[in-house]
View 1 (cartoon, rainbow over the protein chains, first blue to last red):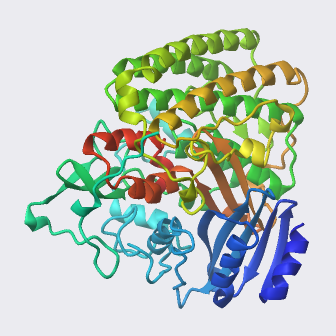
View 2: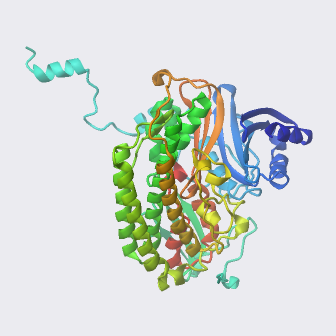
View 3: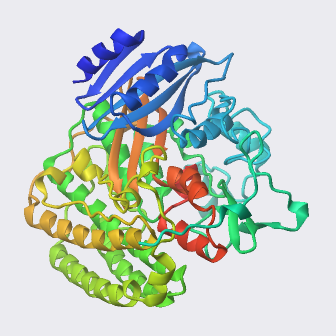
Length: 177
Length: 392
């Protein structure tokens, strides 16, 4: 079923790689300039009316963000993930809030967490989860959570690491006997 | 059914960018924060209300009070180290996190959990669903002043937590469903004690029906209020009881069956009026469905057999590059995990799709307009939102 759908879509849009994960789940890569037309086609013609999620994957070694628009067709009981690659240099993407209003929430989170901008999306620059955040977007791979916590928080007293053998020796023989 | 039709002439005009033209200095409008510390809020979130008189003209959801960065934390942990983290994403119904994560890892790693583990997983998920509904019913009644309902439902929820403690060793975070299977089988005599609990829940639900659903005040304040137009279901990604109360039969257990649901006999509960009362009623009837499903599972499940498949050394467990999405029907709707692996020993990306993400932000902001201030809390509860799964 997924390969048939892919063949039909490929006749209309220049599609990239197809990954069939299960009988009811496939991922298709598409160029960003064809995304809107493909999403509208999927929604209006193919019955993929439910935007399950919109999220990003940071492939820092390749210099790209992968945006995944996961769409669901309840009648045919299948899902298709549309993958769009965005360079880490030009991190902006066309907003899809007019296609699915709920996309605005996902886009707002993606701007905050990955720094991917969606110009025109309602409230996309309003703080969503983080307030007063001045560091790099925290879900990017280069953001070091340990370094951040060490710089911004103090360790609770009593959390020093002990070598068990030395610690017990010290407890049992405090005078060093 | 009566649909509330407010006088639109009272409302502010829109600016060119689509936002409302609200002049707070005019004295006509007032900013009012509901939450984050407020008895009428559904957890660690707040709603910034702009009111005109006692009517809401605009509402904005604010989350972030509970952000723990789980998705980021998981990128730095091995696959097995993520397992005790995921349940903490949703406190009242943590088991779906365990199931979705475990199933996603199993799929990408090419592991098949044993048959008996599937049955026990389904049992746990249905037990968790009842617990979640009990919490909801207490909250929904409490938001409208019926405090005693919460005491009753908390009592039976506590009985179910006792069963969870027997089965898993923990009351809230069970950490029982792990990649490869489940940790243990049912203890001796568990079935009979579970049956006693189910009967107690049925007795309580009968009382809840009499005192809550037949209550004139509850009906007056919920019928026709908080209407979700069925046309909004797909654009706003509405799932679960919120969709089923609008007559849209969305239930992952039927639509894309998982675990042992194809072998169980049940029909999704639906309603048609799509107001707060109908949503509460759908959930009340869904409790009965879950009770029936638990009885079916206990009767049909294999009593012997392996519970865990053999895993590779989990400390050096690398999973080939791939991506998948696993979903389940939790008490609030579609719960899902999008897992991306890159061939290393750590997840590349884990994205949690909680139903509250759409229900508590985009949908709530849409529905809250025109609502009376006193109904805001009840409306929020009627969408059955849990903030932890919004901000993960």
